[in-house]
Image 1 (cartoon, rainbow, N blue to C red):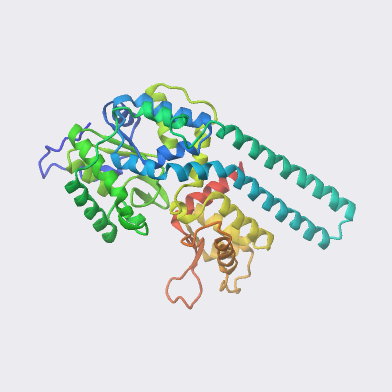
Image 2 (cartoon, rainbow, N blue to C red):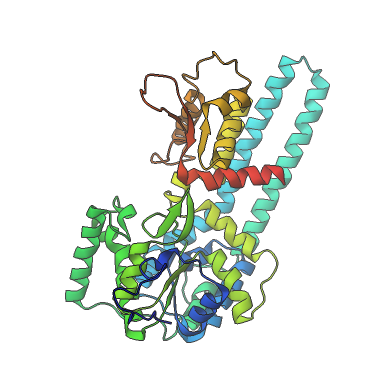
Length: 431
């Protein structure tokens, strides 16, 4: 429900001008899910084509359970229809691509085995036995990937009259989609969106490289949400798989909630509080409140899609698989100490001081740290060339200096966008 703004100018409290920093409670989410406006982003609808059939069904049930609080901005549907065909094709080919990638990993693993066997003069028959076991495992994994992919996609089609995703979306969104802006309002919104991109004002400025007015698309979605929330005078829950900084307030690489500017703008336009959740979080929050059951594995599958990410800006252009490959290559080249420093820095809010680096690497105190990041930088470049990460991907490890950059490094830092990804990978290693 909308906040009370009648308090006098001299009667302010801790959160009056800082509502974006208030952590939502279960009561807050109950209120917005039962009396507010729940708006999914285009990526939420498009990701239905990337989920397993079970996860897709559970998310659609969750959207249906919201009932008349569900409302989809017109621009979201514009982007859904514009990108549906390519998303469907990409998702269909994901199994084939995964099988192809697995074949590449199998070849790499066999080369690694052969190199090691030669170094230790392993008997040929023992090498052949290990290679056979290795190939058997990879063949089994490839076969499973293909089988699962074919099973999931046998009913999905480009034909909208037979596509089950379209059938369920049509039912869920009936009467719950916003109207197109009039031409004058549309032109004003495009101009404002482009202005915000140039001034780096949220939302949308992270899409600056998109062609034409595409950079203003996020602002169009936001403007339509503002209008509908102002009309209803209610709180808003925006569900999005977009994790970029022009939507989220980030602290040490973690998304802590919506940008304060967006929270304030919603309030001044007549709405209430702004809440934001990823699809995974939405399922976890909505299920107990709206009283619908989640099947085992659905949340994990949606989290998998979020982790892969549909946007190169997530985690600075990295994903869990690319980061693991970086660590594997560093380890193979006997740079395990770099991996250890990266993981330590991530646990220390992104920074490893020089003393800790010396301790982790067991270096004598007089040894120089010059060139310490070179193996990381070189392999990162290789991953770019292989297409594993985009050209815009951030550097993983950077030297820090207290004063003169030509002097001794005071430590090393992991890019803030990568901190949660590195920690997640570290958690998986420990489990």
